[in-house]
Image 1 (tube, rainbow, N blue to C red):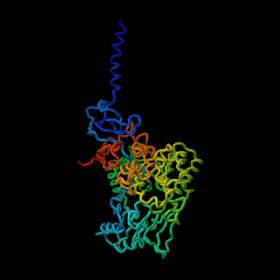
Image 2: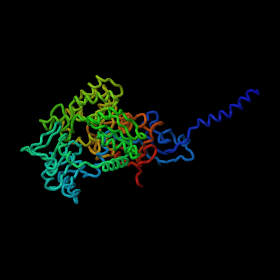
Image 3: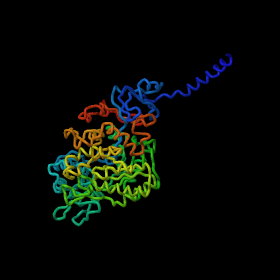
Image 4: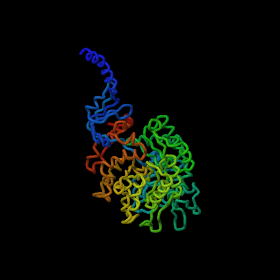
Amino acid sequence: MYSRLLLALVLAPLGTMVAQRSAPPSADLVVTNARIHTVDDARPMVAAMAIRNGTIVFTGSVREAMALRGATTRVVDMGGRTIIPGMVDAHAHLLGLGQSLRNVDLVGTKSLDEVIARVVERAKGQPAGAWILGRGWDQNDWSDTRFPTHDALSRALPNNPVWLTRVDGHAGYGNAAAMRAAGVTTATVDPSGGKIERSATREPTGVFIDNAKSLVERSIPAPTREDNRRAISAAIAESHKWGLVGLHDAGESRTTIDLMEEMAKAGQIPFRLYIMVGDDSAAITHYLARGPQSGLYDNRLWIRSFKLYADGALGSRGAALLEPYSDDPNNRGLLLSAPAHIQDVAARALRAGFQVNTHAIGDRGNRVVLDAYDAALSANPAADHRFRVEHAQILSHDDIPRFAAMGVIPSMQAVHQTSDMYWAGSRLGIGRVLGAYAWRSLLNTGIVVPNGSDFPVEAVNPLLSFHSAVSRQDAENWPVGGWMPEQRMTRDEALKSMTIWPAYAGFQDAIMGSLAPGKLADFVVLDRDIMTVPERDILGATVIATWIGGKPVYERAR
């Protein structure tokens, strides 16, 4: 009896010490009273979460989360609002967005006259000779859907070079002053992978497609480094307003990447930025030698992928098709890169542990990329390479299963479908359009489809792509029942396509993409539950706040 009592007296303090040591430290932040869609299959819906040092440490009930409250813990009652993981745009152009914010916005223009009117208004007060830049026109939205000619633009602005990029970035429209400044004449030859639109007398009419754009763009004064710094910061701030915590930047120069890295190192990138190195031989060689870079500067920067181009865009008839365009029987589109180049970069990337992401829109463009990847992977077998095809818009039925068979990710933008559906059928014809924007066909093979916007081609708002994915309807909820509705995503898939699937596509899924213990505390507060409201009400949702690493980076003004 005495020995048992003595043992108890000895062990009691030790037990207290063990209990004290095992008590978890308090949280920095506890979020309560919310409808939290975690995208975590273990706990898909919770009411609260606790965060410490920018990382989620608990998700579950309010009572459990409050057990982690300490003397300095901030408790935020969300008033029953909806929380989802921070959204990530899997294909966008950050600097392009920043630049577009200060140029003439032509998105939504319904005629050439409206385009010219906006440009004339912006040009007021500009000195003669100063370039006027804009972006966003789409002749498919006009009553006359032919490409414009420079004549009316040249008459309206004879003394300023004007360069207006088409909404998809794959064509440009310039006036006579711009073509004079660039030295473009009747004798100018179409470059490989590009086309100059011409009159019957071979005079350039002002529209330059794909690689031909460089004939004019090389004469435009380059923005300064400080201009670009301001543009990047402005684009990040704009992204935060719409609930984006990061994006996959689809092709940047080494100069721009150096600037982004400088900004991240200085704490000026409050964003998760996955950068694709643009297709430049010197840049590719540089980054291959440096090696893959992941989670730099407190998980702000990833540099471990290359962006290549197979073809152009469908709207400007530059997408490479296996058969001619239904509305242009002498045209099969443009291949912007030799297939051997794609295969070579893919092989070098596989050996160095880099990802390759290739733009392909037409069915021929997609086949060229898949064939190049197949050859590179056969010569350099690799598991978990996560190679991607960016857009994958028009697919031959025979090529759909190849994505899953090779482990290739189709990185698609749902909002492109609802932008293009009005005229895609005339480009492709009845049979071919069945392979257009075929998310369900791809998902049914067992692969994931990360979503995005391709901004500034489309608007920044990621809920536009969410709505398109689940409804196959435009912002006015047209057409009734959706365009090719058999290709719709479920809401669960659509949410994953903007959270965990982009994280997977960027090798970030261990730390991002869902609200689960051990992951970064990146989340968005919405004023309505996009997972339950009627489809027609999804686009009425407003971002109340965007949080990155457990701190608000955007809060809507009350």
